[in-house]
Length: 190
Length: 316
Image (cartoon, helix red, strand yellow):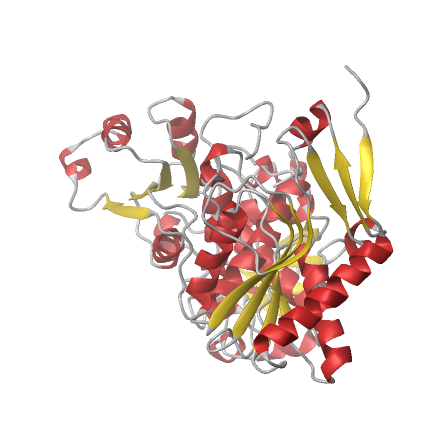
């Protein structure tokens, strides 16, 4: 078995630039920061959401609320594996009603996580609109879901693994692409 | 997590903390407009109650429904049990109906264990109180309530007072709290402390005043008159004076000390009404936390695959 090769596709500065661009795109699309709510999907979507909200704040001088939305109990593969640990859900006090919710995740893959997130959001209230921002879109969708804001489109094969590290969780910012059997074994990619 | 929850002693520290952390997430559901999660959709939970209960049965029912499970309530009164049907035949009936979990309360100690080990049912068995043996979900909700107020329970002092002999709550709490690192002291008249208590991971005392002054939490137990066919103490008044928590004793407690009671209370007996209704009392909170803790238990036991999987399946 050849040693799995890992290649850096985005470094710290690439990620910073991508997030800055996405925050501008969000503002452009929304025509300002009004009624925005940025919700990250745990684990790594949450710090990314917080950074996007902070960048929007820097540009517009308006505090945009951010939070976390755990989708574990809405997953369609819940019954295929042993019980999963829940992550923290943190919805700002004002709720989601009438807001334009920006869902944030690190990697967009099958689309199943986002489907679960839409269901979870539906139980929290009725947003005016829901948009999706991802750091990496690696393709291989299994559901009719697409991202509105993408950091980087990364064509991959199914045997590859996309590994996102963010400073708040992993100590540094980086996006790696790994080939070989490790990808299938760790199951990190979604 | 294991497949059944029969005893608080079966839980490792990691398991117990996982239940409490999960319950913390479940608790936030109560503040949401739609108090429902889809995690147990299509699963069937049977509440099999051979003994009367208000809080436990209702909160298990609410917990299962909030997780979208189908709930079947079975009370021994009004069923074929009153015609003499055995636990085994009842269990086989429930198995035939496809129960994924059986929440069982039984007047005989060990009935849930028998149900789980005899292979009468493929589902998970959750002990909701068996005789004078154990009541693990009550201990979990007590620990959860204490943790919310006191933080980590490591090194915290908890005093459990009263009828320890007949109390499944006391036994489960002693086991769970010591697993979580708390220091447990059981206080009661010698006649109401069980034989063999020396082998429990606890301290014991016959004197309430000296124990409560250094407690972080005081748990009062109900005097179980229905289980007392001998005289364990001379009179209710004497018991109340020596082991009841009244205003005078409450004044001895440190400022942060919590007062708990698993309910139902005998006001004026083990706890006076003004203590039960005081600001230190978290008795009502215990009940609402009960739903969150039972949701956590049901979620962790039932949401995953029925078959334990050695290697994780390739995720898509």
